[in-house]
Image (tube, rainbow over all chains, first blue to last red; front, side):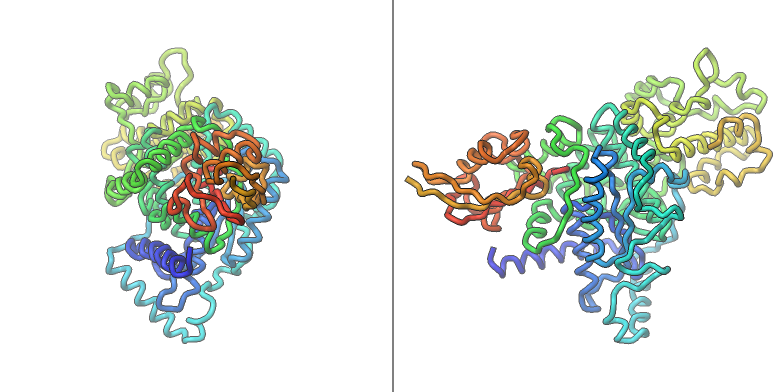
Length: 494
Length: 101
């Protein structure tokens, strides 16, 4: 390509990145933004776009404060320690070169996550466009007041002792070091036990999301940027449909994803096709690190993800507008409810508002839930009774089967959405799951049980679920007498 | 009769994993009756360079969808794709954009 062509391509590419951010007006000046960098082409390109955006002259400079997180998921893919160390070392070199504060975490750290990761914390009130303008104006005034020497200096203010280009330890145990072999073993055992590649991919995605969310929360990042390209999102849209995630498409593939409440995931690369990304990275020498993934060298029909990728890309060869058509569809999807803050129970794993239909079993979903008939979400009618009835006359305790509240598998299953239930069917043993998932499942079911007990008192029950997802009721907040109730605390609190 | 050609073949984005992890290959294509084009280069690559799972790189007589081809840093779609006639000292780059390489 001749020089004018590359200049034009570069300008176009950079403009698209900035336009996506500018149009959506979600990222406020001075806000801490965590860039999720996998080392792959799209997220590498994203990091380089931010780097370039911060080095611009003051009028066009990006105004947020970036940090980078890299998750080493080698254990889930069965890579050798030497291989993983090599990849991590490569990443560290790049991270140092980039100069943002960075966090290198390993997937093994999911074993030390707290159950609170799975809770949705209320978002700080974000107003309309007017608020954004006010914020930008006050930021500019602040910059002006600081004087020209500051404005022309480093775009990255040192915050909370984090120095640019330095690793940030975010856990007292000193993470990012070598993981105990036991956790690596436990992780590979977990992934080894999963029956299908489809379920493995989904589980990996879930755990990785939780880990990144935790890093973001512990370090005060209120946005996470992921490098999903338009091609990848089109594939994800079709894959999600096939996986039964139709209800959550707008969250899974939209520009912003507010499901976690306080930490919003944004996808600024969603207007770039993978072809553009590959060309840009090649022409402007954007480095990336190849870490073999779970599906590397897997046959094309190995998983739904793989199959859908092959299907769309093959179609794209014959009909070059395929990807953009699918992707435009994802743009038109509207989140319901519109504010993205559903009240009511959320899926334990994907953290979306539950799409289950507990009262109507004459649906496809109802038919599916019959597979674990013990696990149907409890209806208040079934459980609302006086405490003396509990444990003796509950529906779930009839018959010889174990009580739902005692069976961890059933307890987890009843708290999952349609898609996650289907996926978790391919995970034979829940005992191998990281403890935070099981602990939160238990906490939730205890909360629910309490809610139904309170529900028996006039005027107490209905508002409970509305409050619980926002977690105004941490476990320790219960009256002591209630948490000591034999029906609750006697069940092996972790 | 086309003379032997010396070209650089490069693999990226994970495609190199099918070639023993080696990215750059300096190769000499022997003289043959027909002029060398990408179509015949792919046949040659399959026979001489590809180490495993050929179906993950070549499908039919072309590359697998999702693998980009650049000839001297230009998109092969602008150059006639499979029918592009190779010149001496050309560099051909294959970049996989597929998940996991």
